[in-house]
Image 1 (cartoon, rainbow, N blue to C red):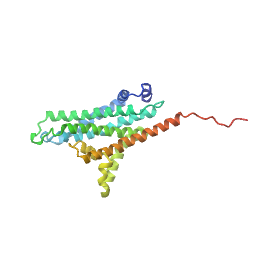
Image 2: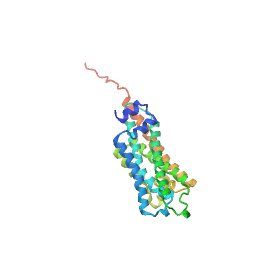
Image 3: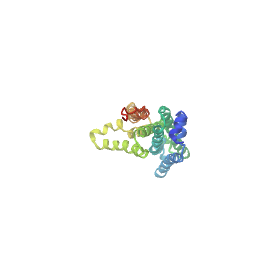
Image 4: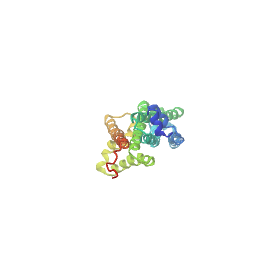
Length: 251
């Protein structure tokens, strides 16, 4: 039984989506790669900077950013399960399951940073634990936003490898293009995820920063997934529409 059939026979519940995210060997490898990306980023920080200079925010930036590259791939795969289901299923449980997986990744990243900071000897004058709760929550939001990009592009694009690449190339490409034009640079924070990721992982968020993140969430999260779900429903209606027999008969 493939993942699409599993989604249909189990009723497409949120718990089933979470199970399907690690239900095959390649997906288990993806879990390992995602966690390893976070650990590798933490080790890179450990090598590059002395422990007295560490802060929770400084560790969270590279750790959560590294994991957010792989997290959308889960969304792409789960969206593919929806498209391959032999009969129409609701998208909401799968999207909630994908967000749950992303939240777990965000919590794991925060734990990596907390452990590293706890075992180090940071300079107390630098307030290494400053804004720890806000930054930890920001890490979860970063992963959830990245996951919605994955599910949205997974619904819109096929095969999966194209959607995988699009989760990296489209947001970063748009960010680079806008940054290359002086008059467009101010809208980077409103149209691309990268500035919001930096803001969420840096500490307190000003009202303008929250507004920018919400704009990004509406475009890359709600927008992509809404269009993807609409197109999927239209394909389902087309595939399941009754076939009208030809009116021409043999004479």
